[in-house]
Amino acid sequence: MDTYRQTLRKYWGYDDFRGIQRQIIESIDQGHDTLGLMPTGGGKSITFQVPALLKEGVCLVVTPLIALMKDQVAHLRAKGILASAIYSGMTHHEILTTMENAIYGGVKILYVSPERLSSPFFIKKMTNVNVSFITVDEAHCISQWGYDFRPSYLKINDIRLLKPDVPILALTATATPQVVDDIQEQLGFAEKRVYSMSFERKNLSYIVRDAPDKVTELLHILHAVKGCGIVYVRSRRKTKEIAQLLNDHGITATYYHAGLEAADKDQKQKDWQQDKVRMMVATNAFGMGIDKPDVRIVVHIDCPDSIEAYFQEAGRAGRDGEKAYAVLLYNNSDRRKLTKRISDNFPEKDYIRQVYDHLADFLQVGIGSGAGATFEFDIERFCRVFKHFPIQVDSALKILQRAGYVEYDTDPGSNPRLMFNLEREDLYKLKQLTKVQDTVITALLRLYGGLFTDYCFIDESYVAQKAGLDSHTVYEILKGLSRQQIIHFIPRRKLPTITYTERREDGCRLSIPPSVYEERKTSFIDRIESMVGYATNDQICRSRQLLRYFGESRSRDCGHCDVCIAHQRDAGASAKESTVRERILQLLSDREKHHLSELHTLGIPKAPLDTALEYLIHEEEICIEGGFLQKK
Image 1 (cartoon, rainbow, N blue to C red):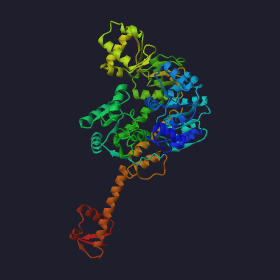
Image 2 (cartoon, helix red, strand yellow; image 1 turned 180 degrees about the horizontal axis):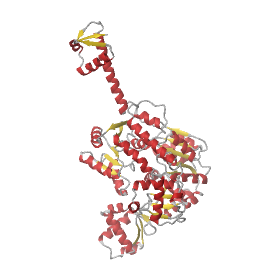
Image 3 (tube, helix red, strand yellow; image 1 turned 90 degrees about the horizontal axis):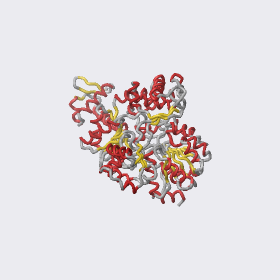
């Protein structure tokens, strides 16, 4: 058995690779820049984890999914693999320790968030790390033409300049031919090298339902299809409403969105994964990296604004290879809603300049100043003061970020942290603690180590669970303990942040180039039109439409989507009609007149008989006169 398979069997228990895994591994092991296109569930992580163990040095993995990197690090460590992660929210001491371990051989696989790549401290430390190769997960994020472009991904080139001889492995599950080319260009591939699996999912039936009443249709579908599933909606409020509706109709459900506390997210996810509830109702914040192979159905109540997003979310069904369904509920209002997203995502340039000026007034930043300054940004208060809508403001700030004027961080990721000001022995001598304060302190000491030597990030909801209290009560108790100087408590930073990357200009002087605005707007409109086209095209097989979008021209009808089933039904009906017509013509083949009553001897039901007669008369093959039939 070769070294690759030995490593696979030793750590993962598999006898052999599947799909294109081995080709990708061999390519990166030979030092080639490599792009791997693998659909959801295709086993992307194996393609970098196996060669990382075999090559000397550290495999640097760039991924935007903090929850996923934590999960993978935990799984790798459980296998005895030296893995670590660096992401926003860690203390300087934690980051320093991790980087020192990477320098001195204590790490084989190092996960980092793309934002970390711009840190001068990280860059400085990386110069001393022996990097075997760089893996870029969710690589479509580096492409301006990708559906999920993230400016922070452009920082990957800084590492590439730092390590010019180190190969790059780019991985993605969703990329059009244009995005495939752009990924390789943005990452500076020495030569084009792409390995791709077919995106075809033979066990997955794609269905589009014309649903004027989406709730009724959803209930009908979930009563007809057994097994667990996911229902995707667009708003946080709707997740709770739909979950409640399903529970009211005897379908156990929970809900999930980005605004939930971490402990709530974990509990809801666990309840669903352990089949304590059947359905998860969620925004697109749910699903990435979730390993539940037996999902039987994914339903989209709200239409996504790109085929890439739809394909990725729908692809979470049937990863065990068994029969599964991906259902999109669509009606006439969806096109209108999708069209509105264009103006929401790309407000007029004059409006963007106005937001830039109002932002400076709000943060009190004068013209010619502010470069490098970071401010907390209360978007709700900003909108109240200047009479803006949050969606358009959010979009305007993202465009200003792409244009290079500000950094707009919507999720600073600064969890609450604390450190005890007292020694452990002195803590036990305290007499003035209330019962609930003592309960919270006990919970903290049981959940976290090192609280007496350094700041430790905590999760208030976990502490509340352990203490048998609610999160708000725990928050107030921690503030009280901080006022008493028993602990130093730094609360969670909940507000987004704005950093001026350049000194503040007068809004009318801002330059918003076509690559940031017009070209991206055109690309966004094209993606919406493609999504609408998919939803409304009932002539071409659903699977074939999706595969063609991703550049697979050699595809065949799946035979089990709603379009294929309708075609089979129509073909069957046409065959039956043709047979009825032939029998009528056979009766009249003697060119004699036959009374209509003789048709009853053929034993044909009235409806298909009437349809066949109407067709033959229209085609002037027969005529009827005075109750008699005759062939022309």
